[in-house]
Length: 64
Image (cartoon, rainbow, N blue to C red; front, side, top):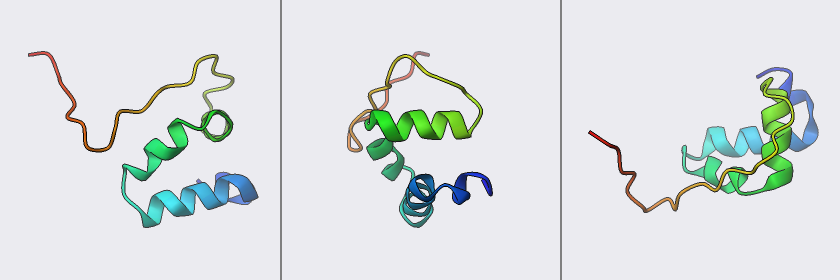
């Protein structure tokens, strides 16, 4: 995380996530530029598709 905080763009995102809650992250998952930069900084490389995060109020269904 230290390396991520050196990037001014990512530093603001990480601080927002740390102060907020996990649902704050969904805001950035739907932003292609932010998502790509976060993915690269965490070692995932280039990602071709953007993940659409579920609505914060929606229930997540799991199979049993």
